[in-house]
Image 1: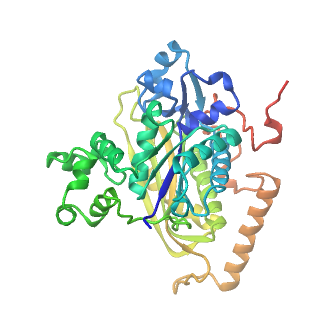
Image 2: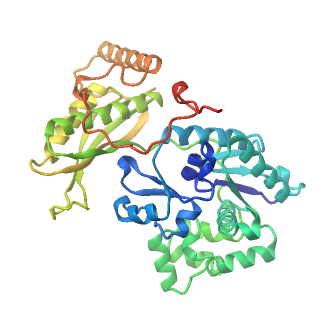
Image 3: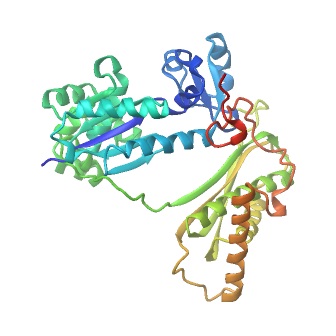
Length: 427
């Protein structure tokens, strides 16, 4: 029996989340802005019809959005994360074999459901998700994950033809869709690779499918050959029930206003380190290296040349201790900070991650086993207090207290589903 995959993808997810608790927004252009209200990161179909590009700086499209009567929101990741969890829980009712691929995408294994009318089954899934969460989704069905992504893309782009569901198991429909899909829209084909393929006369998904796999492997790579075979309906990528181990943890934010003082930037970096270290401990991991980065804005109206710099510190012994990571981060910041510049953003990256259990010590460490036990107990106590009493109730002094550098979110909606004091009021 050939495998069958479905990809369920939320339509314009962030914009749809904003509409769940405000039905008056239906039919009206909606955009969601990035941290600090910088760029457009989500658009409703009405906003896309206005020609608002993804990633556009808000100040460049502000007048156009105002003229069109668009609703503009600061990003509210607490709300989006909770609604995503509810969508995934609902999807799990329909298949025992699911893979949460991103905050708004989920693969479902439907091989065991092949004797059903899968188009009708997918419509049932759409209705249920819409009724239980308020989030509209599109579903693509095919014999490989790559083709199910393609099917979903077609369903989303052509709702008048598909009613939100596209099944590419039918050969004639598959031929039509592959013929009208640009090669750059195929899952796994990036922009640069797309240009190379087009230069060699491969402009559509169908032309890529019909290319000899062995030739593709010699000219490009094994992964591109796998894409070709997936387009032929040969399943090469299984549904992964467990997420692969995280490779890195990033914590960063734009400043609410430009920062020049080292002290304020140091506080921001310290706050990011604490947040990243807390995530590290939640996942039972340790890190072997930390990078600190700092940049000015590329849109600075003073005409100054944009500045970006980063510095990496490799640890002698991997750790999850916030205090140790703070010392490394402060040393890195001193290497990249330049007086007189108006900084827009800073952040930290933890990488070289590994499991805490079974981690190897260092011959050069002066810390004893008892010291490490006490430090881990301290970190655990801090995390538990903050979990019970609220985030940042106990913090390191290096994080500061006033936080004048914090980002602006003047257009953020309430956290309707996660805060008792922000529940929507009816009547």
